[in-house]
Image (cartoon, rainbow, N blue to C red; front, side, top):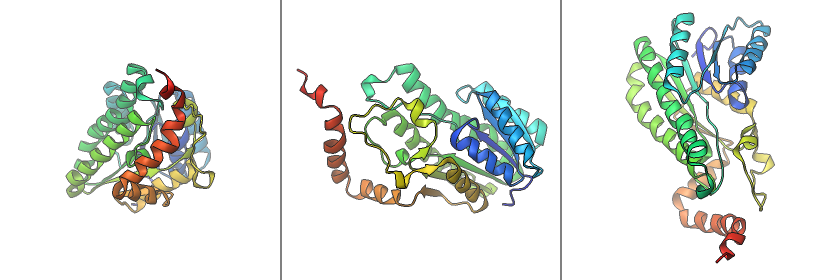
Length: 274
């Protein structure tokens, strides 16, 4: 796909991967629809894209992806302005990481599923008839390695990303005859605001090795490449593929290692309680 002049919706565009992705499409001369709740950040980003002088136009829309009416407004305003939708980047999402019994039923569990799963499904559902009528389009769903390998404290986040994986796989097989590509991208650890809001508390200080950490810009560049040359799934960096294969083919080893090197040390005090 020639990206210049195409209409691209980026959800969760106010920070992190979404912000970097919108900026990258702006550099390519695409018309970028910036959607998120923090409209002040979107307006700043829109000004930055305009200053690139690539011919890119922007549309700022304040939207909460957990609300269907906001999603419908996002799509209708995009069509009103640009008359078409060529690319949808389902990026909006967040994580709350803790032991399941400690997660708040509404603010942590329900909210994650509403945004990470229903937000993706409902946004895609609203955009799909437009792309089917065009007989062309690209849908890229931001997943995570948690969508392939689920680890302790990631119960709900992993569940949401596994759901996005299954949804995308089925959708890809539904819409390909209309010329619509559906791709999944699975980043490992990324340097964003994610950890600041996830509430991570770890005694073991377990974290992604620094040499495997990605920047938001690296993920954004991969997203643009996926639009140009679609593929079913892309794990970045590629070394995480080893973890995926181990989880699939030697799950007992992964269970043993994770439980004994993470779960038990993290919960040692609780395990000692009578």
